[in-house]
Length: 480
Image 1: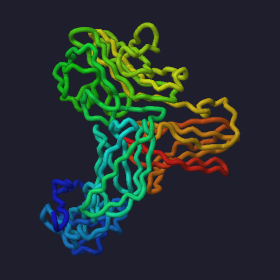
Image 2 (image 1 turned 90 degrees about the vertical axis):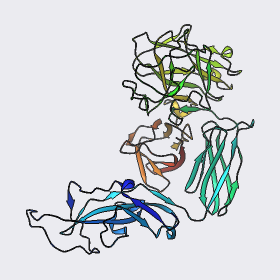
Image 3 (image 1 turned 30 degrees about the horizontal axis):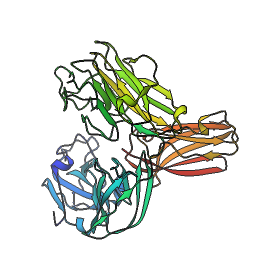
Image 4 (image 1 turned 30 degrees about the vertical axis):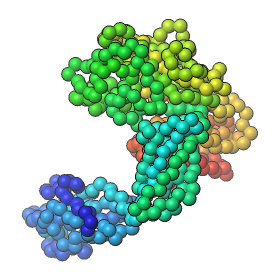
């Protein structure tokens, strides 16, 4: 609204009669000072609600909340008329049900709302060296960020001011754009050309829309062109359609599908059985260079109609299936019903620009599930026996990353080591290492979770290593 923000019962799920109450010691209320007896025998009476506003970082510091209703109100909708005068930031509201006897419920919290004054827009297109749009590039400025769509276009609102933009992509590295000026009610256009494709590629399939059958930057080739089998009494978009692989979310089917848990996250790349003939379906990576290892996880949904079959191929000339030669052996591989990791040595292709394909060749089975694909560029730190000349903290790989990244470090001498992840506010997110380590090369993997094993949001993070007198901090970017 023009005059403020309206908070209502639907937004914050006001508890009309909470299960239990506490004495909050509200010294700024007009509640009566009557007290319950020690046995709590006096019956409480409902007086209304009180509302507070606070920056999100103060949620656990009630003394820093701003009271918006010194006296209880009985309506279940409230307009915060001071909203337009607030500084930029993220805010929440708290509501308590107030009773006689100076009693109140525990607070119920709204969702967070971002306040930006004097807003302008930053927009543009991100392209690679060939002029092709770059999908899912992460464009970030101070307190604002956006991903590019399939046309390489991004758009984001920002407070008026001067910004430095960081533009990152898993395959194309990072570009820094300085002195981007945002003017209130105006649009600033910033088009970006990314550097050539870099080594490495990782994808857990979490960033795509559910049940799409084309998902850049992958190339999908459906050679058999057959309709596909579905699942009895279960529906989802693009079920039965001719397709190669589909972004399959078993939690979003109707009803949710049992026994199809992804290896990580909520989604997999799945290849469903062709109806008319054996599958000949291709899942092909973007062009990659300077890599020496390809790994992924795969499984069959079940073995009722036989195990799923696949082959792994390499092409240095393009994405036409005829361009690939297979590195997985003479015959196909059968994926068991349990998640299994497959690893292929690519050292022979290190200097080449290549495409890597998973070719599903199942014959009237059910569906193949693929997750956490990772093309790796190894360094000396991957060899524990390599001589260590100094204590160092290396750049993580991949960077940007999703869903996980590997951090390598070297110790010249045995030492206690701590490795911690911090967010851009300087808050500790995760302790990865806190142990005594031998001299040599070491590695640790961060999967984008905090110390409570909760997934963290996209953005910039810092990893800090402490080993004796050695201390080093480096930056990484999580892209979801």
